[in-house]
Image (cartoon, rainbow, N blue to C red; front, side, top):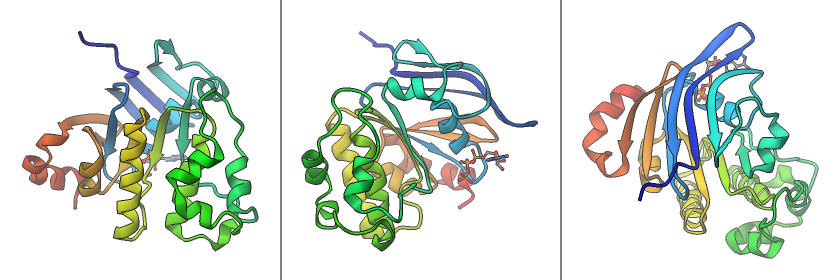
Amino acid sequence: RATAPLLKVEGLEAWYGESHVLHGMSFDVRQGEVITLLGRNGAGKTTTMKSIIGIMGKRTGSIVFDGTETIKMPSRLIAKLGVAFVPEERGIFSSLSVIENLMLPPQIKPGGLSLDQIYDLFPNLKERSGSQGTKLSGGEQQMLSIARILRTGAKFLLLDEPTEGLAPVIIQQIGATIQRLKNDGFTIILVEQNFRFAQTVADRHYVVEQGRIIDMIPNEEMDASVDKLHRYLGV
Ligand code: ATP
């Protein structure tokens, strides 16, 4: 029996002031899936994530999360439903240590990971626990920004280009982390420009162009879709 998707976005439109950037986004995500939003710079991927967590000033259409319509909800109530965003900028407090960064977010829902569980997932953060945010490598900062939200109890994660600017070996580690979170029951939307990486972690891929979804590619069709992807992404 088909179950309702955990997230269903329909006809989503969003604006920055007068600038209309999402033009009827529609897609869905099932419980436990990892899906990607692929697309060129400026296609509207980040704006889609900001709309889902409720920080776009003007948004219309429908975003149903776990049976609740959230299109008009303030972001703090959406966070309470267990939806969390890891921005591309990562938002690490550079003057604070790793452990201080980890302890910052409040537990919003029951089921947030303990510090021990977080260190088990990210052993390198345990080693660096006393280091200042500024002393971390880009990869460690990315791990820390993901680790930090796991404490909140959010089970639906929006990751904005987690691999941006990182070395291949670190990208692999991020991929392994995403796999592990998926196995632990998290549901994840990943924004990516690197479709080769996307292919190693995701179940399905939505292609975003000019504020709309223009294609959906199941992961098993990615190899056969390489020409199309090069066209879409201009790579
Ligand atoms: P990128 O990889 O560059 O982040 P993206 O697909 O995530 O690409 P968005 O950041 O969602 O794209 O941007 C969609 C459109 O909205 C772009 O035309 C962008 O210039 C515009 N835009 C993004 N942020 C703002 C803002 N704060 N104010 C005004 N326009 C914005």
